[in-house]
Image 1 (cartoon, rainbow, N blue to C red):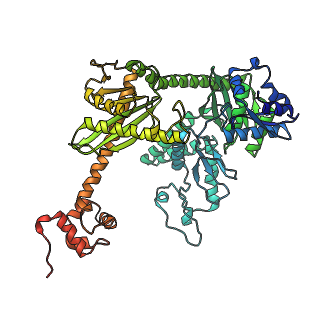
Image 2 (cartoon, rainbow, N blue to C red):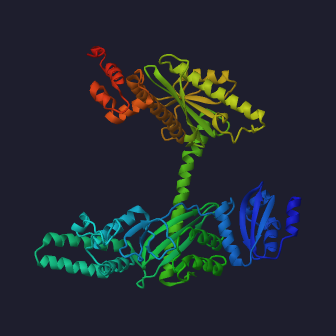
Length: 630
């Protein structure tokens, strides 16, 4: 503990508030306390009683700040805001960038529409949802438009200037208020039916459709009866997918938390209008050593923020820490009714919590399995590759090189970068071959490695002169960041030229070549190639690097060919600069259309006069010569 910490600890007040733990000026943890003096001092006393995570955090703390509050509730709200603002490393963080769709009906308007929105605003409109993804909400909208003739456009409605009814009105899908075909009272009745339907009351709609189908069948309008039958089926399918769990039609969110030694997973089951409309899992990294009560406390405050409105009842597998204060905060955010936190012990609600817990455990298990596969594919593959090529350490930065040309013309090289087994696209680079004539991939590879490593030396010297070059070379960007391993697309000859270039620049970086025919690995100074198992993660990583280098190089080479083709047609014509070329392409649409145009037609393009038209025509028709004026 440094002297600054001792002084600040001695002057801590007996007051509620928040504390911000710092390390080298960065906020690494935000907490709240009923009594700041007692709570903050606990971190620096009885270290053996702390968890591993807390001990690691305390070892880094070199300063802290406090913010005094009038009450514990105020401290709770401030803590949530500070966590959201600073995203500290050791706090429980909800990394939620998903904004699920809602359906919105602005009942304050005389002719409201059903709108799809991503955020719940603090207005007087009716909101229904959230719906689990765009597919689910599109299904609901499709059923609504088939059942209720509400308008779908945002056209202004003016009584003094009615519009002509659109096709939707002719198909019976819109009451056409913009054309004066309905009254506000008739339209409001349909709006109420839509609100009831979205609230889970589908019986009246089904009864109405059933009566219409039977009436159409009695009148031998069988095609119309079949259409109504299909609508009934759509409504029933929609309602069946939303499992009915509460006949009273309440709104609830059910929360459960599963943990392992590292992370936690919170499952939220959404119930709207007495029907289960979906569920979602949220991973909380590094929260596995926290209690369920603390996790849910932090989760609830962060989850019901940024426009997400809490329901009237939230069921939890355990009540969160300071449950009454959390309940008060959520009630404030609901703005229109009290929010109740409950920990059901038996009955239907308890079964719902158990369902959420099973889903949370399943989601955590799948996430861990996915992370394990991802590690095997990235960092694990790097470790396997290091063993295969005889490296002592694990390569962090792998660079792959490839040469692309067409019979020696427009020769380019590509450099792709993989960091910790994953592509780092911002680090990719192209090189135009400058010193090699013709299709000589060996010399081209030598040039590229020479230029790349020469740039590295220059940038590192500049950083060293400024005192900014780290001893371990970590944290560098651009060419100054040297690769730990280099892959050359080719066999022993390409490898030899590349290594000669590297040694001439004063570097001895591990390097190998990959021959495409048998996927053979060639190492410098070794005659026999290495063949890896076809299922080896190391081979898969090498192939990804090689294929990415080839794709990146080919894409650039193709763009150069296309540009060169256009240049050979237009850019060599005297008197035709960039502005006139743009005018020609805008007017004619393509090079072939320009080539087939007469002199008179060429003059019709903007900025093209007789002199330019004659030069352009002669460029595409060299055998006809120059037109002589009479």
